[in-house]
Length: 60
Image (cartoon, rainbow, N blue to C red; front, side, top):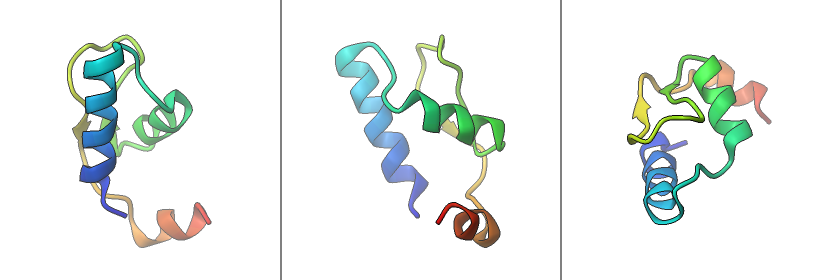
């Protein structure tokens, strides 16, 4: 999984539409410590770490 691609897509979506796509996913990623994000923020998402192999396997 390339988090940079997903982060870039979400940031571009926000820039165009002024609301975040996939809020449920973004909230879960934030709760897992993968990204710095809140539903109220107006600045780009920051990746804090990549998911572990275990986390990726658990998502399937």
